[in-house]
Amino acid sequence: MPVFALLIISKAGVPPSGIESLESSFFRLTVHQTATGTKFLLFTDPSMSPASTETVIKGVYERYADHVCKNPFWQMEMPIRLEGWDREVGKWLAVRR
Image 1 (cartoon, rainbow, N blue to C red):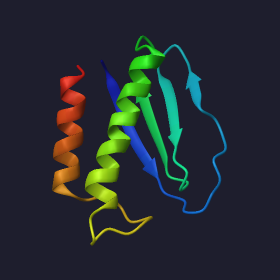
Image 2: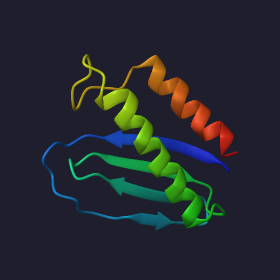
Image 3: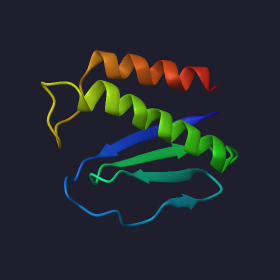
Image 4: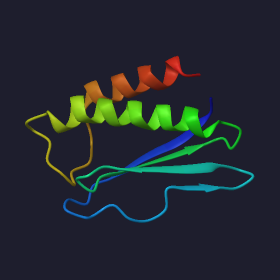
């Protein structure tokens, strides 16, 4: 399962809007937006099934909620520079390869 990139954009209080997915012959972009306005953008190989992509992006979101949002030193719109987050997301993605 080739995951090319993961991008998280925090815009507190912004209602869900915009694209949900975009596909080309080179990549697939899947967007998951939370109720708080945070968007998770996942770039994958287009051969990866939409169901697998959703599983990955939701798993990343669960780890974000556990390791980033619950961290008392992190605030919305700050870059995520947390060892625990990097480790857990890396493990999550490695298991899905």
